[in-house]
Image (tube, rainbow, N blue to C red):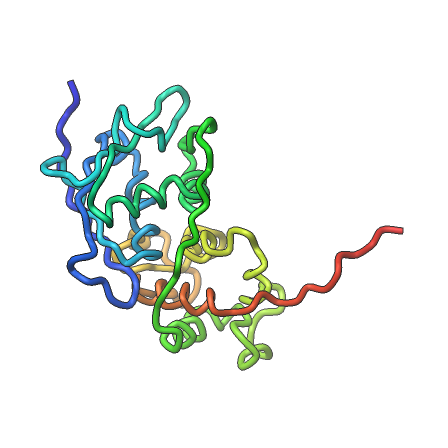
Length: 237
């Protein structure tokens, strides 16, 4: 018998999240216990500004056995129910989109999108305060990365610039999960997203402490940057 799991997870992201941009999601407890939802939902909210509440009662959308295949782990497949709520529909479209599939693949643990599923590419509009994003990027990222021309002489030369990283096909996933990537995990704290550093393993340098609003603003700013011109490919002789 399927156990009932009730978990309220409110993800506040982006510069402003209106109270009416939210929906309720009923999820198979196995996905919650595996940590998958804690991985997916903050990233969805950072991109869309939609708050997701997980609750089995009166859900707008169900992610469980049955429905349209969306998540797989080995032979197990979880699907999405039909939805009429616009925000719930947006989550379903995001999870089935190319961006959502890459985010799911990035979680690991054998979780992936069902490979027989046709990928639906959705263009995600990233909006936010560009000035606040540039300021946050300079404050938190500019110590290592060239954010723009104004700090090109103060960054670490071995780290990629924002303009270079805009050439990556998965730049949006990288920026929305940067705190999980080496070496950031050792010194970065995102309020409400990351766990505090264990007392026996403090940050080796002055920690980078950010909010979800900071990340959302930086994402919006990076989206506005033109990818750096890397020149023509080198021709082999």
